[in-house]
Image (cartoon, rainbow, N blue to C red):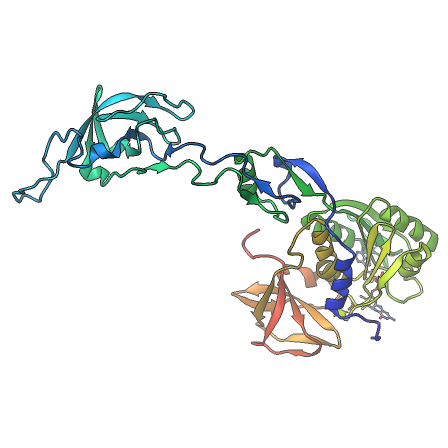
Length: 429
Ligand SMILES: Nc1nc2c(c(=O)[nH]1)N[C@H]1C(S)=C(S)[C@@H](COP(=O)(O)OP(=O)(O)OC[C@H]3O[C@@H](n4cnc5c(N)ncnc54)[C@H](O)[C@@H]3O)O[C@H]1N2
Ligand code: MOO
């Protein structure tokens, strides 16, 4: 460990200062899910555009249904539980049927005193009417209608009516810049008059694995060989973070080939993710290759386990993350640094994984002067470190829900509290 090793927060700050939201592009709504809005959206019209019924039933004048206001209170037979009642409330009001207002077919006819118009859910309230009675609360015979007041209850103006503009007034802001668009947001944009939106362009990511020992997925490894699983993992992690990924496969530990592969990866990419070859061995050639290509070094190592030899540089327009080849180091390095970079480029306001204070179900080992990023599962609300924490062990990533940030020092006992980054919400996927 050297004085050059950066604290995690400092390293992340350097990463983020090299990333600004990418320019906007217009997208049709069906293709904008998950994208981040680069403009404020306003309602092009009020919603609903007119007073509409919320029930299938009858558009009426509320005054006709209130005793003593002129409706035909035909049968004063309200139930009084068998007792004689000196002032019986009328149980029914009789109205005359006039026309229909159906959804998509507003009626221009006026509902006059003593009249009711057939109306469906979502249909425009006709002129003259100010309330709706549900069809379950009436009886109809030909052109006559009797409203059962004991069932309908107090029918005041606005009863079962959704007022014009009650959802949204015309011109109000409906979605602000920086909103990550979800299906409900896009439905709102559509309803309020938009067919497309200005969203940040997604970051373009190139993934490259290095190492003479690597063989392709599906090939049985020979003696001393390993399957190159990091490329797949990084491509999927980057895709899940909203990036467009170009997987360049693998390149051997040969300087010229590596330089060519890195230059190719950087061309047209916003971010390059390189796995392996970033330690200090004779065959760790990624850093020298980046420097030879003229990359601007931004940091070389971080106080992190797994993932100490994690380097960051700028090569042309691309930000290059040189991630250590051990699978857990690659995984953790992506989560802590590359994912926030991709989210910043994509325009998200919240770039880091949500943090949660967790209680440890078992002890978590410390990593000396480094933060130990312990892979863990969430079990009954407690953080249970996965059995293996070896950076070269793929099993140390199996079912990983959380990255517990064990501070530098001797570690934490069972029952202790620690901050953790939440990777998944168990049961939600
Ligand atoms: N003298 C020192 N040696 C090492 C140090 C150090 O500080 N001084 N750091 C160690 C640490 S910590 C790590 S982490 C590794 C990082 O090494 P590299 O980034 O150079 O990675 P490689 O040597 O290329 O590979 C390490 C390991 O991972 C396997 N690997 C590589 N690529 C893939 C892939 N695409 N898919 C799956 N597995 C991969 C590789 O076979 C090795 O087993 O350096 C330590 N050494
Ligand atoms: O830092 Mo390395 O990633 O511990 O194995």
